[in-house]
Length: 117
Image (tube, rainbow, N blue to C red; front, side, top):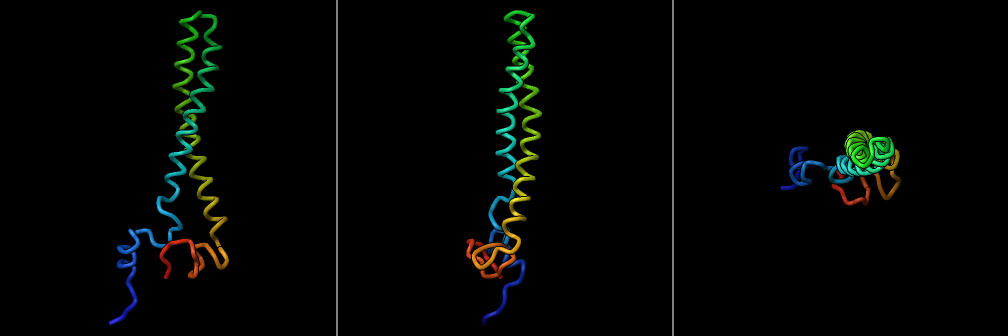
């Protein structure tokens, strides 16, 4: 007997993310943005903190660099993660709204490798 699959059966076959455009959603972009932001923020603020600590001599430079790096890593990670997520969501909505003959979730004949019904 041949029949149409239910939504639950489609989710089981597709791993629970049928027609989602790609596995992982925007979480991957958010993590990558957060890591990049943390590294960049730590480096920039370590330099700034080190310069600010010059008056305290070598110990002041080291302390300023450490506290600057910690602060920069936190702020950089937050802003990088948010920026990565927003950029991913914007990109997905702009690139896959219609998609034409070869892509996009709005097209049931998409060739982007996902299960379409």
